[in-house]
Length: 79
Ligand code: SF4
Ligand code: SF4
Image (cartoon, rainbow, N blue to C red; front, side, top):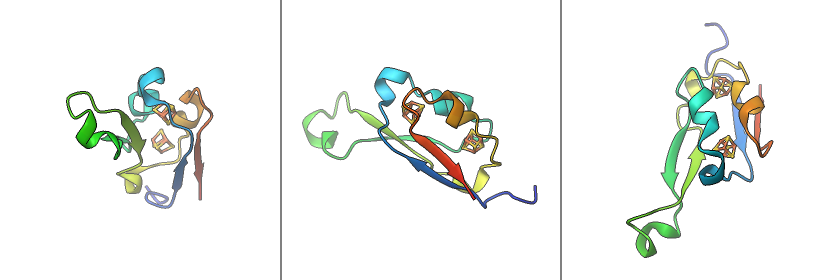
C-alpha cells in the first residue's frame, strides 16, 4: 500500500482495563500492543495494569477503526 507507514498515532487517557482493549480487537493490521504500566511492575507483578501503545505503527493503513472504537475518544490518527 502506498501510504503504509506514514501515519502518526497518538493515545491519550487510555483506560484499557475498563474498555477491554477495543482498539486492539478492531485493528485489522495488528498495530497495538498492551504493555505493563511502569509503576506496577514491581508492586503488582502478578496482576499488572496495562496501557496500549502503537508498537507496530508502520503497519497502519489509516482506516481509523481504532478511533471509532475507543470509548475514551483518546486515539488520534494523522498524517
Ligand atoms: S487506523 Fe486502522 S490500521 Fe491504523 S491503528 Fe487504527 S485501526 Fe489500526
Ligand atoms: S480503545 Fe481507547 S481506552 Fe480502549 S485500550 Fe484502546 S486506547 Fe485504551
